[in-house]
Image (cartoon, rainbow, N blue to C red; front, top):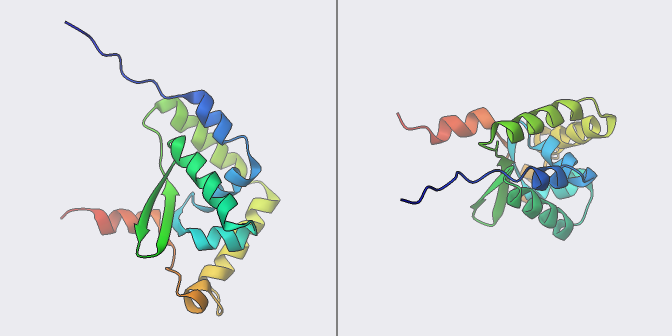
Length: 141
């Protein structure tokens, strides 16, 4: 009889994912909500290909998930099943809340998504969906 050991979460990959300022900014923005990629590009002021590369890196690390809705790509946090990795991610996100630049990113994001000249109105971009709203939309009665 062959016994399969459960696959261990690659913590080194998580630490590499968290070791880049742009990726930390992306994670901070999507910590509470699912966000369309167009918001990342505008808020962080980085070209779309670079944002996409960073998001792909975070997806490979298992801490971001994506879905397509028409021409729009939406990204959200994905908490790892590994307890140690989840604790590291939670502690990192908590520490990021104290960062001035990241708080400014959130303020820019809130103006873009909810202000009078929002990307929703200007580009037809989908409004961000909070994590709680997303769960209620996908739950089965």
